[in-house]
Image (tube, rainbow, N blue to C red; front, side):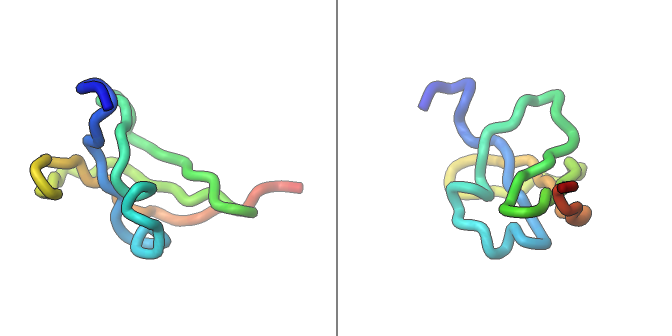
Amino acid sequence: MTLDTEPNTILEGGPATGLPEHERVRFLDAEQHVLKLPRGNRYEHFRRSHRTVRHRASELRVFEWTGSTFVAE
């Protein structure tokens, strides 16, 4: 990985607890405050918090789960 795509974010709460680490720990643009993650027939919504956590050798921004919405058919 290059420096500009090193993981800088971790997803917490909701379905993130069931996500594998490679999906919970990810790179997001510094300006991004909301993440809408497609998961099958729904989207999981995460919002950037003011917290950071230490994960391995990195300090990661925390995005907290705010809810789910289902895909319209």
